[in-house]
Image (cartoon, rainbow, N blue to C red; front, side):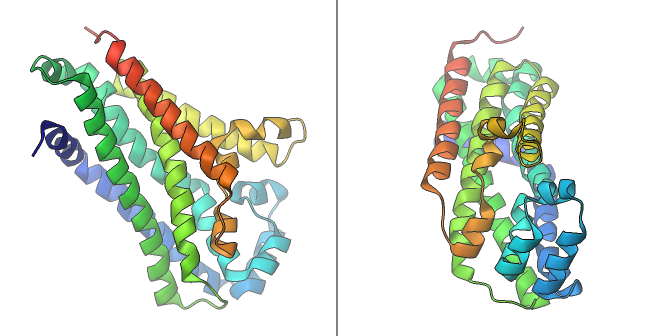
Length: 273
């Protein structure tokens, strides 16, 4: 096994307990969505429930009662991909892994030790990238598995096309890939784990707030495209099985450009003393 893969395995093993705990939370969150759909009376009950919410809460869930009434079960289940808790869990998984494996190893001196053994900075960075991509794939798979299991157990009313889970998984992967790219850049710039996590959390929160306010406040609406969440539309994917080419390109480009910028910073910066 190459040194790069060995480093990837070590990174994954170090944070295994925390990552598994967050993945279990992610599975359970998606699992209960179909069960809740039945408890509120199916598609009509869901539409009535959303209609009773203030506009601010509807914006947080990124949905409208008219949309729920038309889209039915698939429209409700798409909330499982756009709910703030979903964003919190997935962002926490990525931030913990990335910030600990780069900025955390700056802070502990482990990075200096690794590079003193004639291991190239490129190999170190790629090992982190491999671990991150694997975790993203697992997170998306766990999300889909939780929802499918919930549907099978709860048997909610309404039609649902399982084939639409594939484009939904794809667009979810792209969102997490974009967040991971930015986290890699911020972690490469930071000197400590707490600093990297703070910057990454700030990026995620600001992006969410901009996307949220742009749907409520006309003055903020022009700034909506600044947020990465502006390009994440799981409802269309889950209901129609479509993925916007523009959204996919933007999310992929953000991940690639930010990740490449992170590598440039990591390759050229001096290690903190």
